[in-house]
Amino acid sequence: MPSHAPATTPTCRPAILVLEDGRTFHGESYGAEGETFGEAVFNTGMTGYQETLTDPSYHRQVVVMTAPHIGNTGINDEDPESRRIWVSGYVVRDPARVPSNWRSQRSLDEELRAQGVVGICGIDTRALTRHLRERGAMRCAISSVETDPAALLAKVQDAEQMAGAELASQVSVDEAYVVPALGEKRFTVAALDLGIKAMTPHRMAERGIEVHVLPATASIDDVLAVSPDGLFFSNGPGDPAATTGQVELLRSALERGLPYFGICFGNQLFGRALGFGTYKLTYGHRGINQPVMDRTTKKVEVTAHNHGFAVDAPLDRATETPYGSAAVSHVCLNDDVVEGLELRDAAGRLTAFSVQYHPEAAAGPHDAAYLFDRFVSLLEGEI
Image (cartoon, rainbow, N blue to C red; front, side):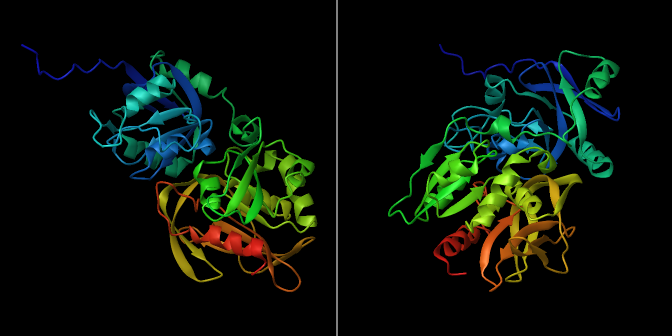
């Protein structure tokens, strides 16, 4: 007679998380066993963990989920935002024991193991998040093979910093590819892959745009070779101050009057192209509930964020640049961080714009989807 007893749960090895200031958390191994290093950051999203894990912007970061129960809906093959998981480590308090969703194909733990992602569970993620809010994002390690916190701390303090890191080239594609327009083709856009998420070209394709996705190392000649109606820069990881070639490409495009739209990292590089500085936020914005005001319409959006750097631009006035008049178009209502820029010509017409957050937001919210329509209007020359 067949047994209906539940399958035994594999015994988890003890694991530790050590921050670079010495704070240590003890828990259990989750996902792959081993050791990993990265910048400890926290994400406040209650949903969308699969999209978070596969967002290339999280390259070299250990992501702490503030929602206590993670993994409920399992993993499927339709929702990844890129070709792999990019986080360098994953921290959850209470992982789901059994996923429950009609689209689930395997558990989150299985996926983390399959892709070699080292994680830890069973720790007080609320205490860890409060520590990061007070002290700032910092380097850390997770290990299920090293039991001595002091030995692990020494390794953490030798690890690379996020400030000064050029990472876009590490997550970008090697070869260009095309995402065809859905329905009638209206425009052609060259999109620089700095860590692009799959939903971004899809949102443009829905609006009749044929998207030529180019490697991060593309030149202005590579951009012009596709005869684009506009240029797009994607999200991506790393320090915008360490990313110089793409800034020069963007300046060349602005000189030619090529309409531009940038998201996240694309906003930071747009700021640098316009002559603004960038700086590292204490602990960044990462989640799906950030309130942002579009200063051009005075409407407030609930938005999805993933950034640790921001543009240093004046909120109270426009700035004259070699390419036109630049102004802050969007601002975070929590802390007044610049969340968008726009560039206008002498006649007041919009020629380029960017936002710091994610209007494609596959996991939601969708308040900012209008920005893709704004890009279409820009390509049409209507604004």
